[in-house]
Amino acid sequence: MAVVIRRLEESDETEALDCGDAPLNSYLKKYAWVNQEKSSIGVTYAAVEEAVPLRVLGYFTIAMSSVPREAFPSKHARGLPNYDLPLILLARLAVDLRFAGKGLGHALISEVFRISLRVSGEVGCRCIVTDAYRERTDWYARYGFAPIEGAAPEGPQRMFLDIRTIRAALRPFPHAPPNPVS
Amino acid sequence: MALKPGRKSVETKRRRSTKFQADLAPSEDRAVRTLKQELEVRSNSDFLADAVALFRWAVSERRLGHRIFSETQSGERKVLMFPRLERVAPEAGLSRIEISWTERELASLAGLVSSADPQPPTKALVRAMRD
Image 1 (cartoon, each protein chain N blue to C red):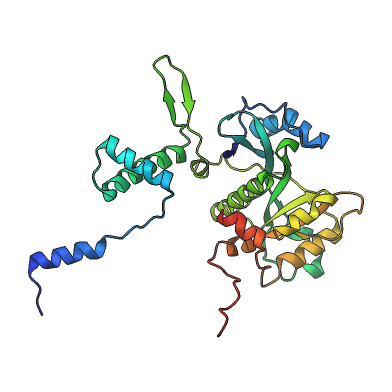
Image 2: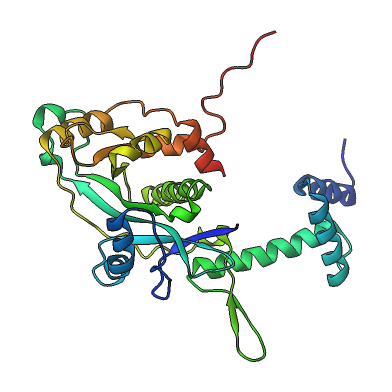
């Protein structure tokens, strides 16, 4: 199955997507397009099958954000640059249940990383932050997302991935073990 | 030792050309041969040069945000969907959003951001970036 990931379009068929989570289903159907084109508070990328290019199989929504320098507790702000901290918020990521386990989530998060790198090169961005469902934190951790401590235990877990870590993943075998000496 | 002018230009030309080697699956090899025949292209170099020219054009069009499509005589259109081309399509700029943070989250974030050495990439991340 050849999949293409591209920006959500108005004509996309979003009704059939069922990721097993009502708020994520509902966001795509009711809010994603409006938030992208009218309110401009988040851009949604849709995964579609090449052969059926309008039916959305999965999606993610991202937006820029920043943390004001003065918001950091003063004793923790010493090592930080003297400016607000720009970041990308991965606000939503969902895969239709019928396509779960087929690598679609991996394809979507890979695209998030590529876009983040591109954005960091064009306008500056220090990290990706996401609010992950507690049962999905292991999946994000596989890609190097680290938990940000301090969230309410019953809510989602806020997670962090350094843009430098993503950049390092492109270097040729940066962490390959040294050649064994015979 | 002085080189004759003609020989020098040949050597310069040789130095400038780059060899390109590709491992093709049998089906891809057959496709290349068929295309070369149809297009009456004799050498692999010419074939590659034409393919690169076509790809460059497609990339430049998509980079401008233009869609590439074929149109039948009855006006029916099929849009070209090519995953790699979508990567050069222009972003309309990401939107901005405010996030609320607790003080403990900000302290934790400050610690993560101010570390001199970032975490090394995991295997899954490396795979994600190289697939």
